[in-house]
Amino acid sequence: MPFICMSVSLHQHHAVSKCISYTDIPLLQRRYIPPTSSETQMTLGEKGSEDSSSKPIFSTLPESNILNVVKFLGLCTSIHPEGYQDRELMLLTLMLFKMSLEKQLKQIPLVDFQSLLINLMKNLRDWNTKMPELCLGINELSSHPHNLLWLVQLVPNWTSRGRQLRQCLSLAIISKLLDEKHEDVPNASNLQISILHHYLVQMKPSDLLKKMVLKKRAEQPDGTIDDSLHLELEKQAYYLTYILLHLVGEVSCSHSFSSGQRKHFVLLCGALEKHVKCDIREDARLFYRTKVKDLVARIHGKWQEIIQNCRPTQGQLHDFWVPDS
Image 1 (cartoon, helix red, strand yellow):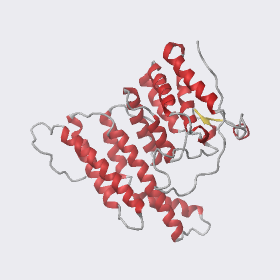
Image 2: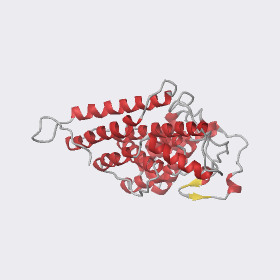
Image 3: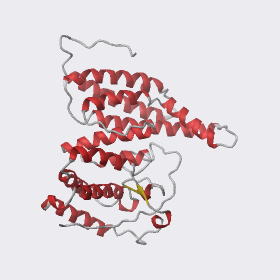
Image 4: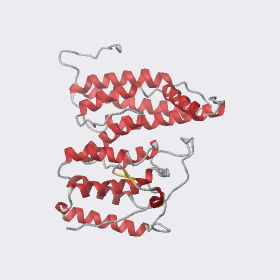
């Protein structure tokens, strides 16, 4: 049985800066937010000792060697798919996702990572059981929103299993970022779309800002926050909203929908306008607000297109506005 055991030590980097500018870090162009010390210790939910994880195996990361191993694993999983057990495939998949966050591996072409990912997902025998476990495992690889969005968008979306993993992983990450405690990842698209409405209500930038302010006040000795710190927290709240909306788009716009789901998208459009769009007050000096509002408009346009391509409910010519309960 072809099996390769590879140990990769991730270097510890300085902490992520408290505020991230939209103009400084465009999504998917600068994806390498350094992992924290607690993140580098985590593999399949198990943490090692701090002493062992803080000492790199190599003084410099051998990028060319790792790239050759990734290519060779892609060859092995392609010509001999039955040679790996599901447990081994899960470990290789999680290792690959963790490696993609390493700053020193940014020169490795994504096509090699994604080709291996396609083979690993395709070779999983008990996909329906392992896919939720895989989502939860990937979800624990980082705590930074930018890294989590990158992990979602690393999953190939041109295969059926890739799209399914991408949607379920997006839901799991949304739940994590909103501090929700949902252990089960729904597979049915109807459940996924209905859960999105519940999450959208909690994505108000003002509500996210209130949570951050309360948390920061508890950390301050005098319990007060000055104007500069409040502005910094507001930028973080809008950045979190920006990431959450991208994840919402991954769940809702990745596959075709039936006419029975039309009503869910009508409700989603209403919730998006009421709870997110109407909560944003644009200002010429605060461009990050406009950036989030522009993303809201794009998602709303995609949902309207889905609604127009689906037939109305049986016996109705038009959809009528229904007030929120």
